[in-house]
Length: 215
Image 1: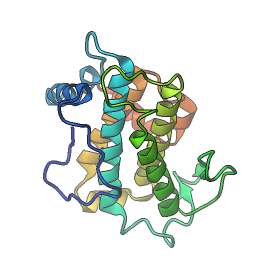
Image 2 (image 1 turned 90 degrees about the horizontal axis):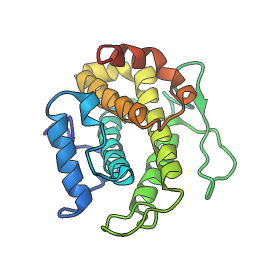
Image 3 (image 1 turned 90 degrees about the vertical axis):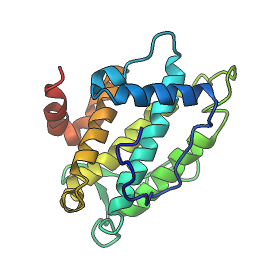
Image 4 (image 1 turned 60 degrees about the vertical axis):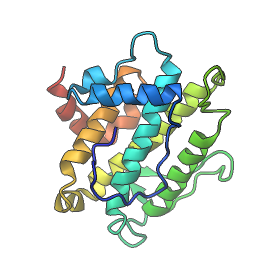
């Protein structure tokens, strides 16, 4: 479901693949076909008869891959010097904690924060007890809360790119890709109410602008 075609394949972390032949792979193909229609509101809707958890997995993996690619294009601009804190504009600063290795939130640079964040997301996606890829393996009771935390944290990477690195995005002619990817992400989290509105505040104006045309 990549919006990036054969462009720069430099990703920040390795791409997460959904196993071919699995039901989730079929869902991914369905999502790609719907996305091709250009109607993002329709593309995010749960396909008839499908399981919401499976749909959330497929889309979460896809957003991880998209953000991975987007951030990979601007890593040269996001450095310890340029971004000593992880922020989304002057009003929003993020401190990292994962509840396991780092229990107490730490203040760190944006590249460090995003490295922690993407590594943590990757670990969750690779955990078969959390994100089962085999048919018939039940999802854990805490699946949706973990998925919501992943999406909430992935949003912060979009927010950082928009607030701190939009100029290089324009220079690299990635603006349309970034906007389409973010719009798709927002429509998805809105459709299933996956991120608290307060968490979206750093990009609220942009969200209203991108989504107002499709109401």
